[in-house]
Image 1 (cartoon, rainbow, N blue to C red):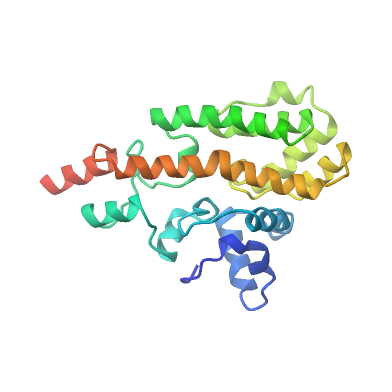
Image 2 (cartoon, rainbow, N blue to C red; image 1 turned 180 degrees about the horizontal axis):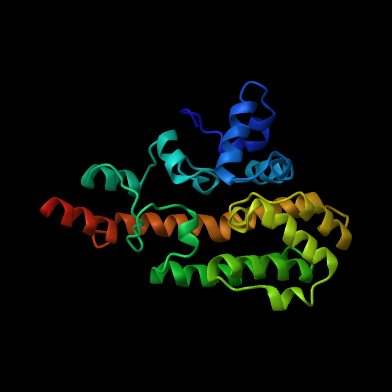
Length: 246
């Protein structure tokens, strides 16, 4: 944002009085939410997850729009090599060639490798949350959110059997966005729901939820996207080649 990389320190940045107005304005536009909903984002969980995470310069891209990230800085590795050999990066998805690439698109991109990766990621998320002692009813909601985003499944039949707290957390997260939850923008309501099952460290578990989403879903998807982009047979390069020939 305006040449500043603010997304890995969201909680600190929002509390910074100098940049608070611009940052809030950016988030309101980026997430398409109200100020009330913005206040419901658990920035403490994001900050806690960030503090124990080893960030590279090109990570946390999912917290930004791709357009804003490109303006913020040039990414390293495969993408930089691609830009060097094939010119400035355009907005086509390297996995399927769809124009107007966004990170959200990668959650549903029909590319075979990405589809298989997402399926494995869902199973791994369930496994890791069980290892972290998350309540089964909470894991059900998280898995249903992943299925809704990645497989376009409708939760109507599942919701009939849900408890009030499950329906409540679903509605609270939906206001921020289900894709946004996968990227780490979780509602503060997760802490309240987790506290109902075990009040030992619900805030810590909320931070673990963010970490699991980043490490199991977002990072592998972004890495595979970049690997596809670096290949010579990806749709983006083929489109560029056809354009040059024409």
